[in-house]
Length: 307
Image (cartoon, rainbow, N blue to C red; front, side, top):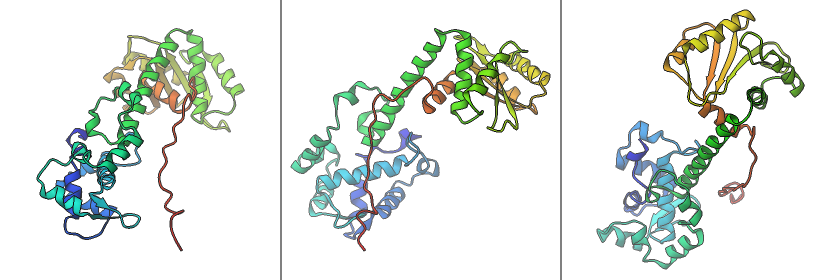
């Protein structure tokens, strides 16, 4: 669905067109009118960047506006207000394709691009799965971030394969603690003593008061898909302990039959496959540490608000 949304460069003429009436307009008005011009579907309008904080359409309209401002085809007389300039009118009247190549004839735009180093070597070395021409800088950063995390996830699973089953069982308990379950590390360590108890690899408190417990099973498989019989056996082990909740974690994957089975029983069993396991480890800093931190900053509107 994202592939059906025009790139920020393709949106440049549309941004100019909605300003062609000469009226000063807010950024929201520009966004709304561009959306009407393209007749975007509700599904397209709802597509969010990987960060989840902004839609693709709003991001691309915003960056199209920014580039046009830097090339001085659009003027911003005050915060959040846009208007077309004589240069912008000339661009529309020229019937030329308005994109970065067109804007590169203006020194101010080239200075802006050089300062921001949009085509950096580091970005070129990261495969993000999309054409750079279609992406805004925000999208390139978000997709590069996801690519780095995907590579890290593969490394995490490979590390787990190379360690003992006992280490994996402890890792699972550590992850549950990091996600906010359980009381203390001491409690979690005691829980792993149940590793040979009827197919249960760990028991952890659901909350710090221990009002309920979650039973764990961890299977370190490389190529074997966990099927319905494995989940049925786990459900049977929960019955032995009169337990109602369980988490089955594997480094591989679950069959469709296994996933269907847990939706049909009264017990609450959550299935976490290798992809989800690595994602949770990254999110909750289990087995990973921060190597580099980039702060993406934006205007603080409150600071610039005059009384």
